[in-house]
Image (cartoon, rainbow, N blue to C red):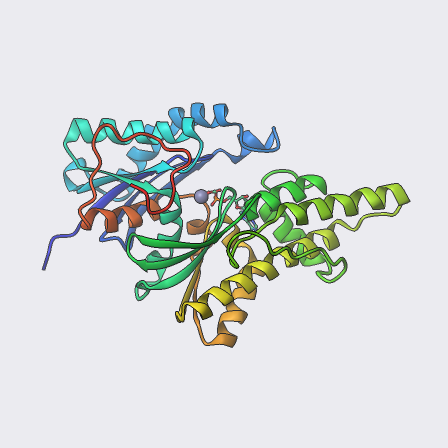
Length: 340
Ligand code: KG4
Ligand code: ZN
């Protein structure tokens, strides 16, 4: 039997300080996440400087905890995987610096990982049978990408948002209806009490590709609706707004994704990213895939939002492909998928 490969992974691209140990790209031995959400809630969104400082505070602690929970020492670790982009530059730098320091001190190889590749790879954790090729929709606070996963580490972007990311739209609309940050989970919850057909918000189709997305028009339509109600002195039913907005987002995401799966004649589809933990979205994709005879994959919510286990999975596949980074590895805030 060949030797196990253990990856220690670090993620600090936004407001979660996280470390994990993953065995052979599929088994999560530990997954430690320190969420900074409470800190940023005060300001209604992520404050980059505060995020960087908190990452510095917590990074060593979460790394040590991840090793301890996995019952491992540095000698057991084959590579250190770290998110080096995209994300907030100051936040990324903390994880990248920690990974480089450990690699320098121990001689363990360093593998830089793309954050979105991590999100997609989260699907491999609980679906041992899942292998490329498949189509994946990554919907998070910073990204909305429809991706053809041709092989491990080989991607083609089929469509992306032209303006706001899906999660960003959730956060902005939540703020407008007084729900606070982070808006996604709050809209998810409130929408259960609302009527998704109460207000017909627009479903925009824009961009260079038939699979591109746009959410800023939808966000403006919600704000206009709220303003008009205020001017007319009409009471706003926040639950109806939440449910109708959510339906507009989900409809577009499902429609584009199913068209892509059909066009590329693939029979597997996977969602990923923080917004993929949305219950209405998961249900809608489950139904759409069932109707088309496509196998649907989604990670558990804990692997949808930012975590280091997903970076460990992606890092494993990069590692076995021979990818190694030097001590000149830098944080790349605008890193493109497939770029090295
Ligand atoms: O993937 P993630 O943790 O961070 C980024 O890489 O951006 O995603 C965070 C985003 C936030 O915009 C948050 O509001 C959204 O995911 N989100 C949700 C839900 N849970 C988190 N959006 C809709 N429904 C949810 N249940
Ligand atoms: Zn993310």
